[in-house]
Image 1 (cartoon, rainbow, N blue to C red):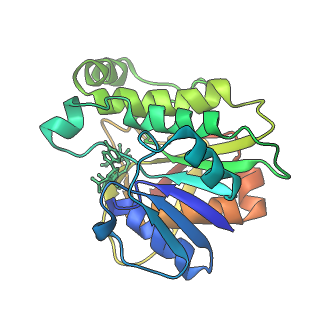
Image 2 (cartoon, rainbow, N blue to C red; image 1 turned 90 degrees about the vertical axis):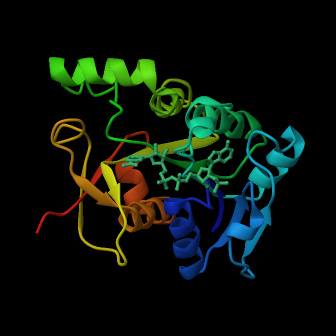
Image 3 (spheres, protein in one colour; image 1 turned 135 degrees about the vertical axis):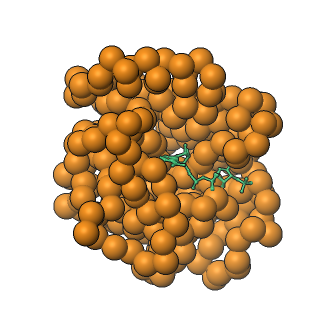
Length: 235
Ligand SMILES: NC(=O)c1ccc[n+]([C@@H]2O[C@H](COP(=O)([O-])OP(=O)(O)OC[C@H]3O[C@@H](n4cnc5c(N)ncnc54)[C@H](OP(=O)(O)O)[C@@H]3O)[C@@H](O)[C@H]2O)c1
């Protein structure tokens, strides 16, 4: 399989790229700084982002790919949080979707890294008044939170009946770094409050799940068009 990875230089994205390569897949990475990734014979690196690359070049790249995995996220600096592009993730995913227009034998599989702080509005997920109020504040103060919400909403609301695209939005809880893949639990909706009782999800487990999704037919059938929540299994 050939997979286009966005955000492949990030803490989770690097692990996704590595895991795909380790599994024998080919990877195309759109990055801002190519020196952040090690070279590999099955890794093509373009020093372009989904927002800077020409539409024609992006369409051509996507024609040769079976899947897209986005691990994009705003850098935790003032510029990253409040500077342009404020809707980095939503705009990148939208541009990807709009560039998939050539007839294909099978739909392209898009996996978006999202967050438990975002609700799946298809599921009527319950949120307490206190959490609702905090999320309202986050929306006001943190553009990256709104970006994550809009990215998943874009897929959910515009890409349900697109015969060229299938998607999954993966929702980890508080991210931590661990060395090895460990057991996780997967849920259609959060089983704990992302604000008041957050669980932990290691980036390597998110990377493992995200890289398995498009290549494992059974896993894909189980979660396509959904927003699975992933937690590290509590010991
Ligand atoms: N922190 C948490 O607890 C938590 C929990 C759940 C979900 N999340 C979400 O998980 C996602 C990824 O997390 P992470 O820790 O792996 O992120 P990260 O290490 O900050 O990686 C972010 C990636 O996005 C790229 N990027 C940032 N700004 C960009 C721009 N303007 N144009 C193009 N690329 C850009 C970065 O590229 P450079 O390397 O060039 O900077 C990097 O590859 C984020 O969306 C975050 O909201 C976080």
